[in-house]
Length: 187
Image (cartoon, rainbow, N blue to C red; front, side, top):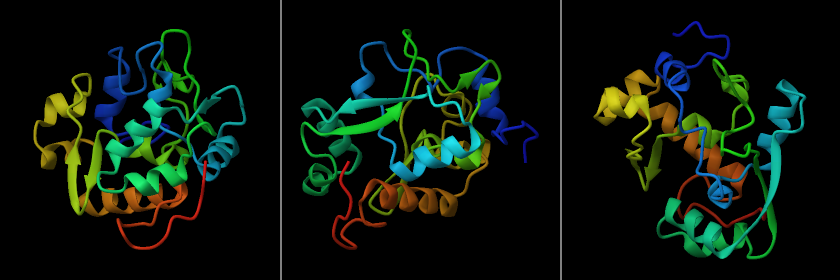
C-alpha cells in the first residue's frame, strides 16, 4: 500500500503533481461536476472542517442528461433523483476549474472520506461490467492501458469497485444494483 498521508495510490499522487488531473474541469463546465450526497458532504466535513469546498448547482437539463449517461437504461430513475430545476451539492472549484480540495501534494481529503465518484474515477460500472473512462489526463490510464493494469495501479480490485459503486448508487438515491428496488432519495 502507498505511504501518502491520504493513502492515495502512488499513481494518483504522481498524477496530481503533473498538473491537470481528474480534479480539474474546464472553467464554465461546473454543471457537469458530479453531485455529492448529504452523507458524502457530512463525511468530508468531519475530516476537513473547512466548508468553502462546496457549491450548489441547479439540476439543469445538461446536468441531468450527463447523469443519465452515467446510468444507461436508468434515465427515469435518474430524473426522479435529480428533478429538473432543483439543486444538488457538488465540490467547489476555483476560477480555473481546479477542485478546492486539491493541494500541492494531491487531495486534502483523506481517501476514506472522499466522495465515491472521486474514489472510483476513472473506473465505473455499466451493468455488471467494470469499465474505465478514457481520460487523457489520467496517469493510471496512460500507464495502465488495460483495466487489469489500471486497477493494479489504483490499488483497487473488481470487488472494491463493485462495493464503492453500490455505495455511490445508494447515497445518490438509486438501488445498489440496476433494477434492484425503487428510487428513494431526491437531490
